Length: 171
Length: 386
Image 1 (cartoon, each protein chain N blue to C red):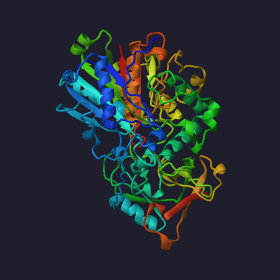
Image 2 (image 1 turned 180 degrees about the vertical axis):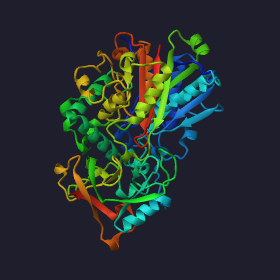
Image 3 (image 1 turned 60 degrees about the vertical axis):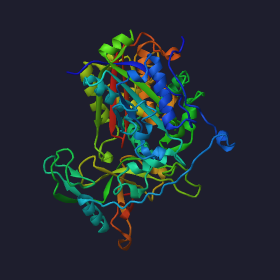
Image 4 (image 1 turned 90 degrees about the vertical axis):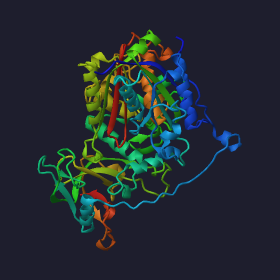
């Protein structure tokens, strides 16, 4: 059957086209800097992380204990003013073993793969996960459903950041 | 009262790894070929709905304004939409509003993406989609969320990497017959499973490529459409939905946003049993698992049974519900916004019987296309019929 579909343009280039000088390039590089205010709810979250504790907010209507804590419940659309400490332990909801950096360059032979995970924190409502990293574990041994516990930076090194928790390790 | 809206023309550029053309030139090529396909000129176009995904790819802030000339937008009502990977079909929904509302009789929908300009790799710019305070200090990369979702999905139903690879093999096979495809080589399940491990469980060939390209469709009111063509393809339903940006608090095994968007589109189209009433499907497939994940969200396959149906040939070109006959993003290429629109082009060609070697047998009368994006949270769905 004849293909009657319409295609035009989209001229593919090869590396040689550019190397040989057939195609000109104009180059630039941007260096953007930002300082983000952490906001009403997350500011308290970070202050508690600095103390070695994880705090959540609870919605009085849907009764969810939520992480990260928030100023308002996005489901009920009412303010969240109840704060509640949760555990620094949890369950691996899902994970990856990542061999690629953020800019798609590959990790070096001497580097360990990144081990991102979604961790459902004990004491928060079911399914309330946060993204974090796993550590002190053989990647081959990681399982969904595995129990893990936060490994904190020493108190003096904490800055009020999500990385005041270095990673989560198997319990 | 909403008016009926038809697709009367479609066209696209070839999808390539690196295009000589600028974004504006790619947009022009797709726009021109689309106008030619239905014998119109720019004078016949009342308004423009266009889409391109992150400005950061081009390093051009407010990229929409830059693109406008290539889309034929000069001195016309022109609006850009942007919902990440969802843009390509969202722009068609957006164009549908323009005509359905009664404000315009024709609307040109143009989506373009040029990913090759960004160095060292377009993926780097997705770093900035993560929450700047609670996630970015972890130095995440885009692959993480796909890998996390794929792992959760596979674990939930006991699917294997080989199961997922079947999608890549099938879509790439379909794509070999697409004249705009970026690929020319067949792959096997072994090739996919043994390709470089990027972020377990995601291997290199589970992923669609980085691409440059553009695609367009021309929408028209019933009055104009009937004058232009004997074979209008009607937009029978549209739907879209955004889930919460707290992505780690949703269970990733099921795309709730696709479910919501699909139900909205099916309700509008009067479809009660989508798995029986839809004859051809173009779910969004930037990763192989995603096609299956989205088929479940689109109510085209029972949750957890999709691999069984896939293995039975249910989703083959000659199966009960052909999936991605175009080849999809895995088989044609993935210039992000343009890839979604390419799926709507494919349905247009399939329903008119113009899809050449890829033609789904049995005169398909109804199709669905879906795209997905933002922080794994948006779905846009279009149901078309003749």
